[in-house]
Length: 221
Image 1 (cartoon, one colour):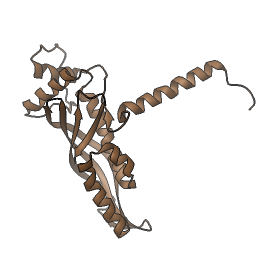
Image 2: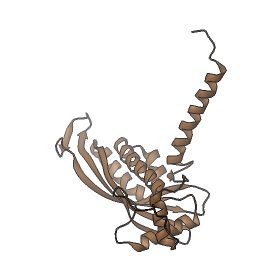
Image 3: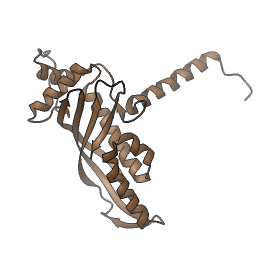
Image 4: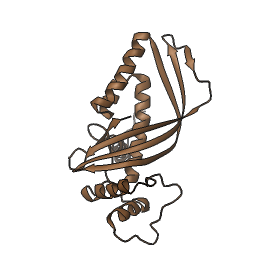
């Protein structure tokens, strides 16, 4: 109990702690929203950017069956994604989707808990207002809606638009959820049963790509 920790172990522990902090910040960013800065683009990213810019594709840069990124029948969105990468080289669609799915889970959890600080961090004021109204209604009626997110079955970009330096990306989430309403004592007063149901949500994210702030905000749900 009284032995000192070896200096080498302190270095290892410090490195682990730094890694965890950096991973957390890569999803949430430094201030608000989520940060989609910069891993090396994947083959999928190369495919989107090449289609949009007209640059030659590599022989192995092909779309896979698991690729959720290419908007079906939406060449304008594909072009916009390529222009976003040209304006901000740290932007890649696949890393954006990692942050978008994390934000989706965080919003559901925060709404369950009426965690207004987290919702304010992730949502712009207009998008936040509808959540606030629902929370106030529940608190007035002394009820609490609760959503259990079983899984995100799919998430795909359906729209992408670039207005000057402002990027807007719409993502279609298909998720398995269990939704109930509880009373003040925690008893279930409304339920769709124990089985999960498929819920489809379309959310829009926005960011100024020229801003030093690397974070995206949810502007519509």
